View 1 (cartoon, rainbow, N blue to C red):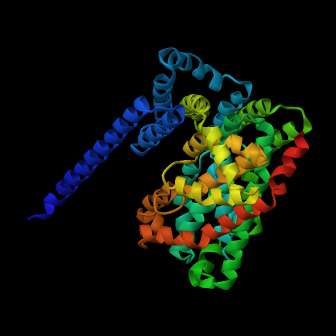
View 2 (cartoon, one colour):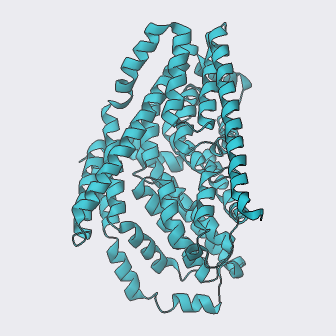
View 3 (cartoon, rainbow, N blue to C red):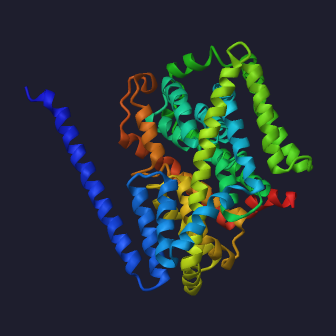
Length: 491
């Protein structure tokens, strides 16, 4: 008789927990406000302002609000109403009006169009056809598809949904260990965060005031290399522990033999001709000097529009274009709002001198470039457990930029480093958001193929893959040329 009341009890408990969290959060905000308006120095006031930002983020407020509101209050407390009014009147325009930022809506529109064109599904199908014969080959195909999907979609989370629903059941059908199957999907989006057109790298370029074109070029080589490194790892693991990949099982033979042949491979390759066309327009235009990065974004969006109209010509193409346009407007507005908050944060940091104090503190420690960067790896991984990559960029890059100059760290190189670290943090237990997305996807019977995939399985899967990603980060630190070589060709 008591069972029917359990959900209500759970609901009441969750409600109580929620109210307690809100109460603690409001108490912390009150403490920050008290400290802000009673602090004797601007440096301490800056610390209280940052504390209020972190509290609002933990409470789940939109990132833009969590950045902008404490910044305005902090400037008001330090310099008065005239300074606060000046920030409110000038920051929105200054943060998004630069010519380089016009590439952002173009890239987002291109990504939305390619998603609606159906190339997403075709790209995964082609990767499966070409790599499934290898030991761990379907995992390799999933990694390749993830790199491509994340780069063209501009969203690691969106790619994870699409790839998780398509890739996990395919791997389980041929006998993959469930932890290898989910782990492969979890890490599949890491390369795509770097491979152009990377929206995160465009945003970083805006924050760090570096040219967009070279910044995008900086991400291309490391993005491809980390995808190759994951593929080599999967193939090696397939040779060493074949049972993890269902090698030699009857299920694997039945699942791969009837569908994978040279005819099907060439057919799948023909189906994704739009992807290399986009890349040729983007990179060919920029490297030849025919396009500026902004013009290349517009040209890429035009090609994506024509592709969508052609590929969906029998399925109401204008409806797909309209949906992509609405999604672009919504995404662009949200990102621009966040950039406004970041501009306000930058002004607070300049006013309070926090960035200068941090630079002096780190410089006084006598750290070398390598030691400094290696120390940032665990810091960003921990931050990534609680914040998404964009939030981390907006919160940390303005603070660290003066330190990078003192440490002689190339800002183009650091953009690739910090974006990859942010994406890595988003998959790291116990709070990595991508891990929870995969767990929720794997609850579906169509995805898990009758196997129970627990949250512990998702976390354990990363034991295999996280060391590979951290190894790549360390290689980046010791061999910065892998990042800096391609941008040097544009200068």
